Amino acid sequence: MDSRVEARVSHRFKATAERVYDAWLAPEQVRVWMAAALKSFGLAADIRRIEIDARVGGKFFFSDMRGETEARHWGTYLELDRPRKIVFTWIIDESGETNPSVVTLTIQPEAEGCLATIVHEMDAKWVEYVSRTEDGWGRMLHQIENLLA
Amino acid sequence: MRTTSQTRLLDSTFHALADPTRRAILQRLTQSDARVTDLAAPFRISLNSVSKHIRILERAKLVERRRVGREHILRFRAEPLQVVQDWIRKQQDFWRAGLEALDGLLNQADTPEK
Image 1 (cartoon, helix red, strand yellow):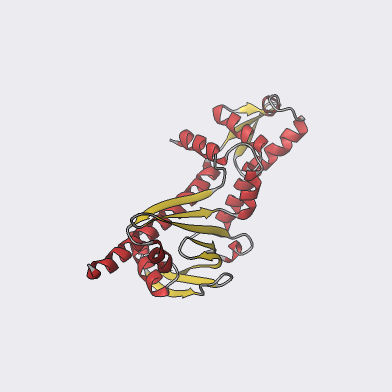
Image 2: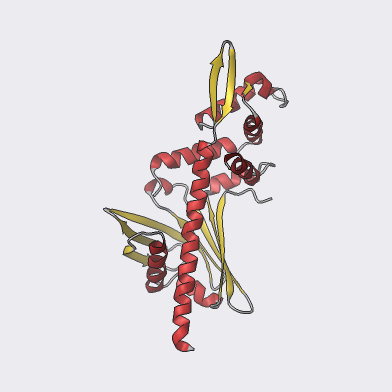
């Protein structure tokens, strides 16, 4: 059983793995899809900054206005392996600098298009803790979910 | 956006859950409230050691203690776990929306070529 604390989502694309990969690193494309994603949340999608330094160790910075506040997201690219994988840290406030959450985008080419999976891991420290324990955090959460249902 | 106090709550919750004994204590408490001595019984560790685990769970607000006469009764509280679940769900919603929007963009870009 997977015992890491993570948010995981997958999506099947008709577009090729290369196109999906490139859309994550081209600022003008990120601006368009991120704005659409924010709008789907009912947010203004008033994007202020999209900066991408697409190399390992390079940083990115995204921000959009949520009312009076500028919601800022930034991080560092840890792995760039076109077209299969992008790994980056994902930070939303200064308190996250010391122990950032890590996002892994995996793109699996398929006969028609590709399958993209995003795994957003809570933090490396926690992942290390749980991998040492026998019991699953997943089972725990599942039990709690039943309890709250 | 995540506030600092929420981050702190997440940290203390994860710390509390990162131990099999503490998770077993919580699982026991999801069934019913229990005394400290009841909780110590199934574990082959000292009462003192169980108390230490319980204190960590209390600090994370996963366990609440009340006194009935000389007894200390412990109760499970699910609220901090709800914060963790909410965090996971929020990230999932965010990334799902991103992938769907990207799919829309790439499909749009396809149309003129066809």
